[in-house]
Length: 628
Image (cartoon, rainbow, N blue to C red):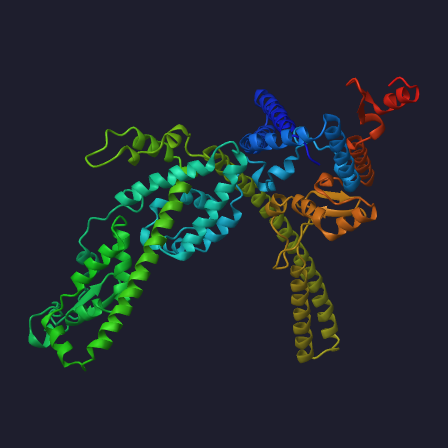
């Protein structure tokens, strides 16, 4: 169906006015709860996006307006206006006949906005109030430095650690596992920030933050990755602890005696092993040591270029001792062509490894910087001190300061959510302690009951022994038979106690864990398993816990029940469990669709020869009466 350019431009301007009016009404509305605030922000963001799309369409129409108007004017000169009107009318009829009733539905993009399609939160996130960091905590526990630093791996320690990642030693962070942990954590924080603050231009914030981080990284002044002013030789080698003592208790490992001089050992701090002093130069030229030393040099000063670090390391390690040169002369000669080719390939591999490792360090530093801006309470002070610093030094530019966008933001970006999460974790720990005490009291009562039963069984056994004495007086049993019978009864009593202990004491009726024992009461309540949800659509099936209840709406049982009712299993019916409510909602939706449909007898209009517009019924009546 075609329409004039002016009509399309007019329609776009009308849509812009409607979007602007609805967005203005939403901005004026004061939200009282977190849910209302998030809903309002996402709706405003949605309408702003629609306004942007309409503006782009208007821009394209205005650019093509002159050519299209000339084309329409050329068509109007070749025929009369009435002929052009009839032609357009025929196109409209042909379009509606070809498309059927599917095109007659009028969708309102302003009034009908489904929030479930715009944003979703998990149950633990409490609609944007708390973090759901269970997956990141599981990755954190399995990191190598957790055991090296003797961290207990609790959730509180995890939250405190991610707020100050710069405190972790850099040599423990330069690995792929830590990089993957930071990547997953940062992606979650990005997603959470976009969901709770949709009106913020996060792409621009990230771009400005990356530009400022580049300045910090080139200077080597970012927290946790600042330059270490220590001589490289002191970092690499040192004297090993004395291993040999003479009879008087004196160290002779470093003695100047000829027979003991070659036995002096040096400690390689990079590789963590001891090497003889006369062979330390060969060890330093080894492949393993060069790799470790290259990592150390890159971590000590991240501002240096990779080529400069390699050149500096090659110049220092190329000076060999006289003994090393003599040994090199006695080695089997190798052809110069083969030696040069091998050295070139090794240098190329070393260059590639150094570039990859430097990129790894920069990526880790960048992700730590973004996480610092998201949740660290020190981020606001850091940005303010950098922005309010004195004039730049010689050779520095104003771009070395944070941008105006970063200065206008309130850091940390997700500080309130982080504080609420910490308070919630602490509160849950206190509740867990009270429930743990209640479980201990219940177990103590059960132990008292088991001891009472054992005493009762033992008392009955003493009565049996009195009866045995009577039988012994009559000589009914010998001593050997009586001992065998007592041993057998004792074994049966022990088996009875074991069987009694194997039955779990479960007064609350909580589910059993992997060890066959009831799970703790705090875990039972934490997962909401004490709550039961009944779904009539699933055949009155009962689901324990809100997570299982929410999950079942997309499972086969609920989908089969919806198909049996001939109702589509869409998001509109999510949360409805009664058949009557689902049927009523489906009927209401069908009526709304029918109201949107095009009715020709009521909405179709005709124009007479004088330009008057009439409804179809009025036009037909006037035509039959001959008044047109």
